[in-house]
Image (cartoon, rainbow, N blue to C red; front, side):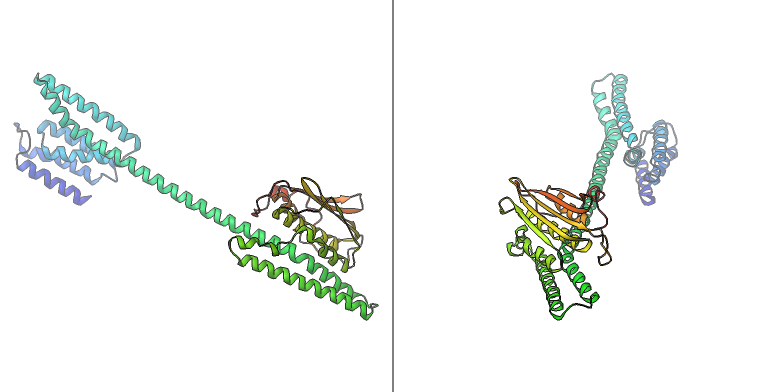
Length: 396
């Protein structure tokens, strides 16, 4: 700003020295006073635009009395421009209106004094160039600057929203993976833990019984490892390969789940109502995982008998698991509390209804109805906080 003010003063001084002013009976040195004031305003054009405008107004007023001079008038246009561009938003609108009125008034006054119709046109154009043009230019640039700032703010907001969406997608994917791992592994390893505990705690088992228990433990271990490898393979695949049919568990494959629970020592009875049929993939997977988790909970926290009902109705499939409640849970396994939440989430994701709680006062029932009329979106979403608070059971 100092260099700009110095150049403006030098330009004005050269114009005054060259005689670019109205000659009156006043000393020439007086013309440097208003020029100095307007150039002082240039020093403050960005830091104090209002003071810059005030100095310019005072300078142009004095110049009008002793001159006027072309140099001071040109520097005053910069005072107007700086005030409109860097000053408060309302000031630019006030200056635009004020300078327009002054330009019209100057033209009308010139025409009245000169009694010539050409004088208003000439004076009006000159006043418009000196007063209106710098203000109008500043208003335009200010609008462009504000628009650019708004666009930058909008771009930053979009970037923040994109980052939030990315974080939400990562969280949802982690939740999905955790749910799949829990549902897939809990059944096998719960059976392994219960069978190995029974084999270690009882001393009266014969060699053949121990062998059968160990075979069941090995079978559950192999099955758990196979399912884990299948899931890891799915996670490594891309695109539509991740939905390959051979690796997706189906509700129709419930017999191996029931058999593993039987091998763990539970009395399980199954009943199929209606005609089994192909189900939408998302419903098929949700029904299988819910049945798997319900049987795991019965193995960990309940006792025989266990009743499994698969009901194929026209517009939905019903999965119901009933088991007696164990009065002595010394041999039971602690629960993480994620089982019921996971089952409820799976049912909600495909638009189904889920219920879990005491049945007939002496047992526990898990019941879910999944719609089959329309295939639901197979994408996993995050958990429903409101749903998690309902009916979470006793930490099953």
